[in-house]
Image 1 (tube, rainbow, N blue to C red):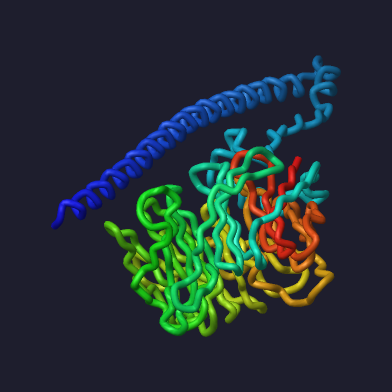
Image 2 (image 1 turned 60 degrees about the vertical axis):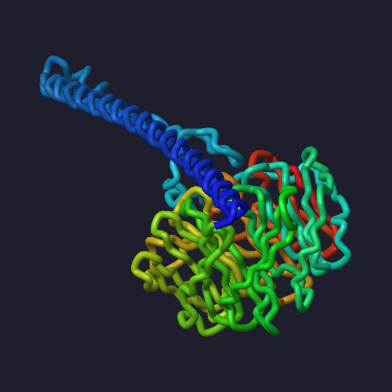
Length: 448
């Protein structure tokens, strides 16, 4: 091993140690938090049990009084029915985690469809736009997982632009990377941001022996774009790339060849492993990782939803609907919930619970004006608190849905652009939506 290789390996190991140290610290913090929550809940339980015991003891005394003839007047008063005290449920903030309940990652399913009157009122106060600096239609919008000011856009011109938000209504262009593939000069079909924040993964096509995957480095070290030699997909477009939520750095890709591939990070490389290529009978349009079960959920144009268990190497979840599936996004808080985009008008979004293997939990949709086709490029995105969902549209609209409302219409529809909206992503710490459109502009929408 040369000295340069040793330095590279040492740098990789140091970065890995730093990542895993942060992960351990995070988990320790969570353990301490849940221990304090447990102690508090035990105290509340004991206090409630004591109140119940006192109430029952008082009830026995009152019953004795009722039986006494000389206490007849008092008995009538005691028998008067009292109104139950109102149960006050703390208000849930639409943005960010501000209550103890919001810190619990397994409570959202109890709130789905719980409101029969109306969705939580939200509004768009202001909208502003800046030119995207792209020459052709935009394709991707991805927010940085480690720096909430950074986001990237890509387009059919093959360029990936790195932006830094300077407030709630503007962003500065930091860098432009020519990420077109080597042979066919194709644009990135999809982009995922590495959890460490220093690089991007872009995917292309398996046709004509072209580059299937590239690493886009955002720092000043080495080449900006590195194309990988491995080519596990056998034909067609690679539709989606998504990092898995399991802590060890890995991501999955899926494509028109019906295949789902798991890529694992090795020193100075990524190694692919075919998970399956026969569980779908048509193009696989989207993939996502379910953290609690180490499961890869894939959705396809064959109308199938497949949950592939990595431990058993078998499909553990199977479901089929009446319409082709175009993308899947897991809920950021409830680890069992995920949303699927479908091709059915007025029922474009379907909410599923991994524990319910035979039915969906809820569905949402909107009336589409400009076209009846349901494009795979209309991507849904969760708000950080997991209660709201946005979707692009073939119309110049952003639709926002509240999963707690038992209706299926948007809580808010924003006339966001001049042409179709491809995606609207939630800022991680501000009540702000960032959107991209085929009008070649980037939109900023302040939500309250």
